[in-house]
Image (cartoon, rainbow, N blue to C red; front, side, top):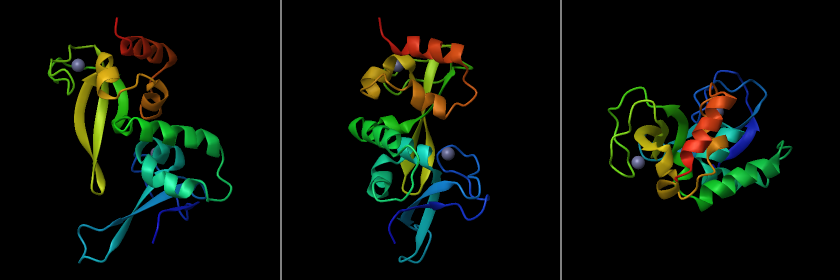
Length: 176
Ligand SMILES: [Zn+2]
Ligand SMILES: [Zn+2]
């Protein structure tokens, strides 16, 4: 079966993109993938909020976005999808935060990320799941992600980031 956009039949499924529950009746994206734990012909379905799918699984989501019925803000979702396809590493963005310690190394420049510096949290989609994939300096986004237009993307996956923090993060993305 192909990927699907459909109303959630229960409120039990958690979104693979953000980890939060998908409300019953809310439109959700189901990505169908070969089940690596099955006997070879099984499939599994990963469920996402539509926005989370647009951010983190743009290529799969695009396959069904245009033809699905009654999708709210289809154009906004398509814009996110296009951005994630154009910048192939952008879907790895899993949030923004100030480094709580100085012990993580930046995946782009290989230098340590100093305590309290803004960093971007990365995940990597491995077959059927997202794996934690380290961090980059906010200032290394231009080199690693090939875009610095990632504030909305990072905020989506860091819902507790306030306006002041978002402004500070945006400033840190710009290399001087
Ligand atoms: Zn989600
Ligand atoms: Zn760096």
